[in-house]
Length: 262
Image (cartoon, rainbow, N blue to C red; front, side, top):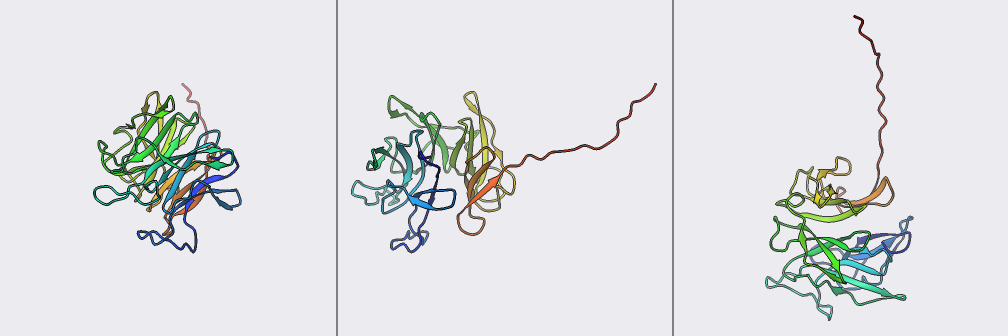
């Protein structure tokens, strides 16, 4: 998050002059939303196409986000199949200005790179990609920052990644990974699961129950307080932002206890 009280969201704007041919809606931008729901588009989200799913370093001076793959002259860049695959970009703040976004070096225009999630020490970046060598569809990967350079991405392995799509990773306390999948047991579409880091290994994912998951796509879950958070779902027919609060029920056992006499 940026150094403020806002939350980062991605969304369309009303009455846009230019629209995405695929969705019929405006292209996505990155916004900061305050507790009253008022939004402000962030300065680096300035392309003609999609900007989405941003994360910030702890000091708020570096952003990583998903952007439609573009040339330096802001035209869409295509692969050999004439597909423009989203890539991971970064922008840094100096004073009150943000630098021109640049692609991370490990991107490959032939594949999708999207949905960044950053550990609290800013040293490990998780993301989703359909690059070669995965389990099928979109897989989750990690890369580590060493002397200012992001290393070769590492697949999180078959415990996390299945034959379908794994996407939209988010972190809670660095040791709990939330993500969405349509390739594991689901209520329908994408469901949110979580896995815990045990040493160097991730535990088997656990699917969140209804009503957090629905028969539609559910994704992008984040905690904003200890027991409160936000998630995205298209359960109403369109992607929307939903809040949730976690409760811990108190159970009471009523009965009688008897002691057996010899």
